[in-house]
Length: 360
Image 1 (cartoon, rainbow, N blue to C red):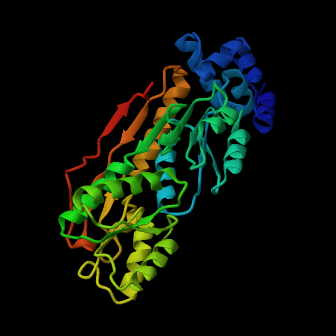
Image 2: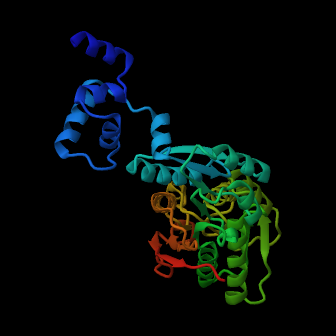
Image 3: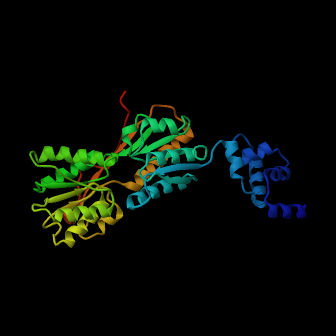
C-alpha cells in the first residue's frame, strides 16, 4: 500500500484514487469535494483528509464540465492605460478574489469590431461578462452575447434596457462642478471634452451646457476637444495660453486632462488658481498629490468596479431573468486648492446609489 500511495503522490491522485481509499463511490467523493448533494459529515471529513494526504488537485476542466462553471469572469474594457482603469480593475479584482473568481481581461481600443471579437472570444470560457465600451449598442449585444450569459455593462447607459448596467451620474457631477465654479464668480468657463463617441464624455458635456445656461445665462460655451489623456489636456492648456481673453476657469472631463492642462498653464506663466481655476472629474489618486491639489468630481472608481462584479456574481449564482435595472452611482464634489480652497467636500451630491427600472 505504501508503494502505491508514493506513486499516487508523484503522478497526482485522481478522484478514483480517493474513492478507492475511502471505500465509496466516485459520485460521493465528487459531492464531498464540490460541496454539493448530501454526504454525511463523518464521510465528508474522511474524504477531505484523504484528498489532502494524497495531494489531490482538482482538474479545472473536468470540474467545469461537472459544475457547468468556469469560476472565471470576462472583463472587456476600452483601454488599460491610466489611473481610472487601474482603479477600476483593482475594484473588480478585489471583489473577484473575495469570491474566489478569476478574471479574463481584454481591451477594445476604440473599435466596434474589436469589441465584438473580444466578446466572442470569451464565449464558453467565462461565467459572465463585465462590458465597458463606447461602441456598445443593442445590435452588437444581440449579435455577440448569448441570452444565457449574465452580463453587466459599466458606464453604458445608452443600452441599459438590453442588459443590467451600472453607471456614474456623469451629468449630475458635471452640472454640480459648473454650478460651483459659477458660485466663485467665474463667468468664462471652458470645458475640455472627452472623445466624441464616448458616453461618459457626452453626458459630461450635457451637464456643463445645462449648468452654464442655468447659472451663467448668455455666456458662450467654450469647448476644447480632448481625448481623456494628459497629453490632450496639455494641448488644451497650450491652446488656452494663446487666447487674447482666456477663460477664468477650466473644467476638464477627467482628471488626467485637468492635470495635463494644469501643467501647461503653469509652464506658460499663469498662476493656478490666482489667474485661472482648474477642475477635473473622477478623483483619481494622483489628483490630491499634484500642486496645487486638484478640485474634482469624486467617483469611487474601485467601488464602481467592485459593485459591478458583485452584481454580476449575483446574476451568475441566481440566473435571474427579471428585467434589468440600471444602478446610477452619484458623485461628490471634492474642493481643493486648484480652485482657491484649501480643501473640503461639498454635500450637494452625496455618494449614494439609486436604482431605477428602464422605461417601458
